[in-house]
Image (cartoon, rainbow, N blue to C red):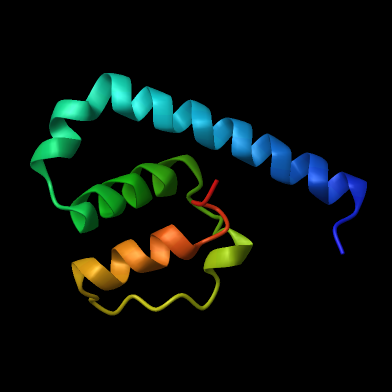
Length: 85
């Protein structure tokens, strides 16, 4: 069960996520149209890593680095609570 504090944190993440989506669409739409999903996700991960060099988000601990298909990546992203909404 989510506590009020967890709900507030989740709401903040959703707001920040929407801001990031808007920014990426506005500033990088043409680039995103030209590259595969996996490349876009890897670029976002690389950017995130430069902002958090010593951290790994709790939902990524133990994540496999295996190469997966475009369909698997898209399905995983669509089903993630951090990407749905």
